Amino acid sequence: MLYYDLHIHSCLSPCAQDDMTPQNVCGMARLKGLDVIALTDHNSGGNLVAFSKAAWEYGLLFIPGMELCTAEEVHILAYFQNLDDALLASEAVRSHLPKKKNKPDFFGRQLLVDEKDQPCGEEDALLIGALDLSLEETLALIRSCSGIAVPAHVNRGYGMIYTLGFIPQQAGFKVVEQGVGEAPIKGMKCIHNSDAHDLGAISERENALLADDLDGVLTFLREGRTTA
Ligand SMILES: [Zn+2]
Ligand SMILES: [Zn+2]
Image: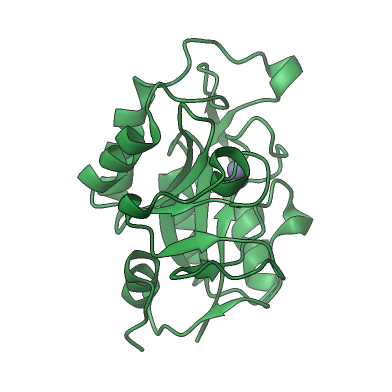
């Protein structure tokens, strides 16, 4: 059994607090008794390397991810089996970002940091906003990097049901992200995450998956079943 929070933003997401750094986030996740976390910044994997090192230091299992915004303005969580796949996907996403520069005073800063929380730059391109990729194209991009796509907060703003009104059958999702207490969706398993933009919001030890290791978690996200 692994306690998880698979939707956390870092200081790279303009809407997240600047203290959402690798040491702070991983330390807090550890304090809260989590076993596995995923970093899912908006449309970028720029802080994944730093977080994967910090997570290792704190003895946390780590899934490199992103939260992509499709042209339909639907948020999709993308999870990868390893850093190389995630960084490949992040690079591919880059050319589909909105052609705008971030305005830090308005949207918030987009901080790149190392694993010791030292700043190493600021992302210039605006990371929030829709990619010029349809839902179908976004899924193809994720899957071309062996990634797993999970619709984010389906019943909230930018969620698939909220925005499109339905979950397309042919998209092949097995798992969706829902709020606690929301009605189950037929044929789908669900995960509950914090979508934390500040340290206090990171999940407590409250949501668990029947898995022994990272492979087990990824198998669940991909297939909606566990091997444990
Ligand atoms: Zn979202
Ligand atoms: Zn989010």
